[in-house]
Length: 196
Ligand SMILES: [Ca+2]
Ligand SMILES: [Ca+2]
Image (cartoon, rainbow, N blue to C red; front, side, top):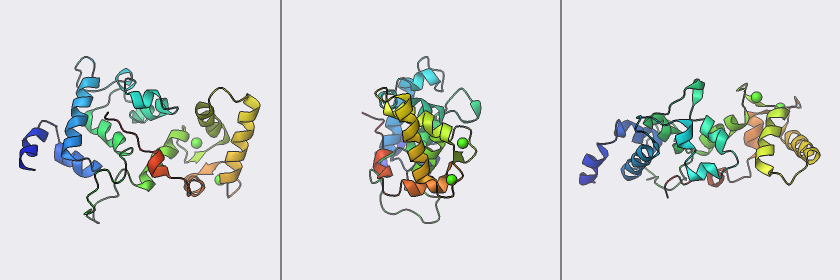
């Protein structure tokens, strides 16, 4: 790994980002090149328009929501560490895991729980910790496409909320969300290959 060190040195803050995200040195370097290529007029950060050039997001029905999650707190620019941190949620499990994780370190960003947290906030637009019926409807509208009538969409929404809503408050809490997705292979669904 000796020669890799000097190359990765080009990436600002490389060691810290690697520890935090679990990306290998080589992947981090490639992501950095990708970041710089997406940065249309060499601003040093990415705008919304820059991110819309990522093909995997352009074809994803929730692509716009995912792009939103690069901009917490209404900021308009994504710096490299934030770019990598969001992408780390989509890092396929087992891709680069060495199996020698330090138990004192925080859970990796691509763990099942962190992927679920990330997915949950794509639904929970007002961030009150619950997916309301209305929020569920908006996501399902993005996902089911145009072949479904408004009426069918309403009934799919009702069924989806009812199936997950264990305490009967008409909304889906994070716990209810994780339970309803228990049988789903979220690790696989939430893996997007950004480098191709
Ligand atoms: Ca909500
Ligand atoms: Ca509930």
